[in-house]
Figure 1 (cartoon, one colour):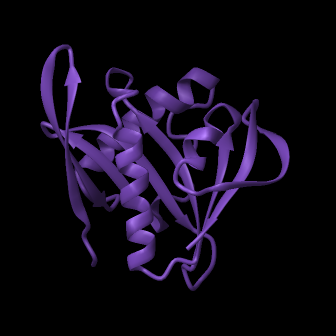
Figure 2 (figure 1 turned 90 degrees about the vertical axis):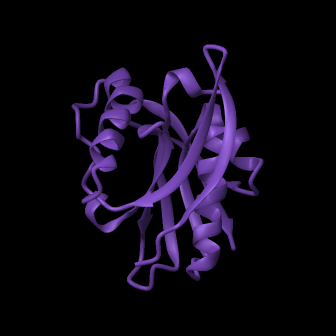
Figure 3 (figure 1 turned 180 degrees about the vertical axis):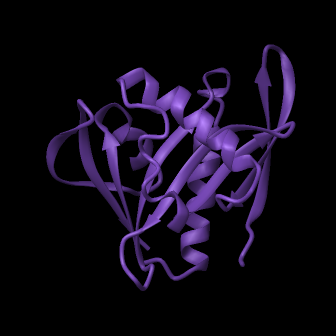
Length: 162
């Protein structure tokens, strides 16, 4: 199994420095439970989705986590959309509140894109919340189709061809 582990970054958290490690994990990795908790706290509870209510694709997906001192502080999930795994969807991007705005999301997306290039993925899709479309455009994602509502939030379809 290909195991990507890269990217060290220093950031400020309450005036102390931190080292970030981006890892690709499976659902059997002990860090997966921390990923689940982060997704519940940052993504699901604020919009009224029950805990663990968005895990239907987890077992067949690739999981990327940002780790600081053995704690998951960021995550993103990549779901294969076809049998060839050449088309995927980026879902469940979350960064711990204490680390938002410090480049953790950027590190996760850069690592995910690198993984896709290394593994012959040809297209990445996103159902992006409208308020973060500009973030994904920085990486080369483009908007397509009409705006739509998902879990009560306005979203845009985005994609990147590799």
